[in-house]
Length: 424
Figure 1 (tube, helix red, strand yellow):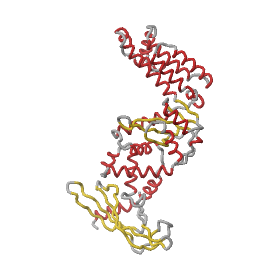
Figure 2: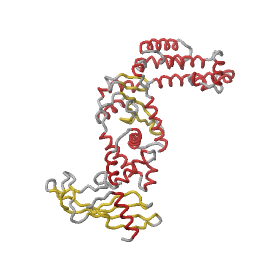
Figure 3: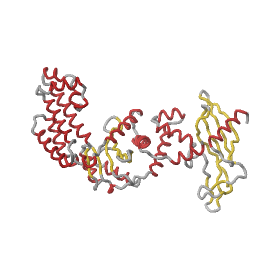
Figure 4: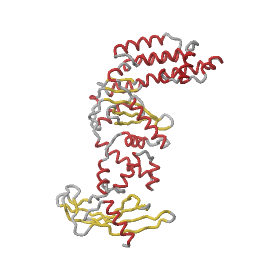
């Protein structure tokens, strides 16, 4: 080998952590036309050195060898290919088995541990599969296969036996009626299960997935959710011993949306109402303490104009005041009073809210048991939406689930980290 090849060989030996039984026997470049040249490195097993049986770890002789190649991290901007005649151990107890290479994450992999760890790190940092494939000069299909295997192995090792409180919510997978339902461990702040769809069978599928990783649906104490009837029915069957809590955010969101619909309808009723309500949207939707001085003054002046919007806003504030009650019992009584008042009003949008709240009434006071909220799930949903936007949507739901667990599952990747750190 010339000086440059020798330097590359020493760099590779150091980065891969090769032991005394391995040596770099050759280094060469191959032209690829208009593309940058490829760097090829041949690693050979040192003659006379015993090999380790992958079954029992016993030092054995070499039975024969088989030629294989791996894609490695780029060296000096060159696409790097590793070649090796892989020996097979002749174990007297277990027979002939292919030796595990020191740079492999798993047997029969086409990538070295360092390249796999690099792909994993890039995905966790927020890059899309297309961006990773471009940076690593590989196909996006290869990237997805690497990430899918890494997530599957990490999830097989995950233990959800301590999960007791979960939140369930849905998010769009792509444009159209395509949704996934995510279950989050509220105490561990991590995604623990994801299933396709948002039907009444989704909670059952989530519970099955949880139990496949050591969880126990009968040990679940509390499930927080939105006001969906499908989730109400599904959670009752899937988590029979858990208290169902309707998240405060969704109750107030329902009332706020109804208030805005009242404003839009009233503004269209006459030119005078249009003039009064122009530019007042956030005066009605914000909490009183969050209003600017100008918004507070404008809202105060409009409260005396006998507007239906002002009446709807007062009903929303009354619903919000329910959550200021000292306990479950008093909150239940106040909720019933507010619902009765709304039902006797002449604001149809708010009456629809009252009917929904009355139908889901049993889950709303449960919030006072531990102030359970889906805020963690909503926060994670914002990350999920950013994943979807960066990828311009996902046609393959499994790819979407892979990215969710990579970014939000708080998984450990011991195989990748152990091998890559040992070879770095």
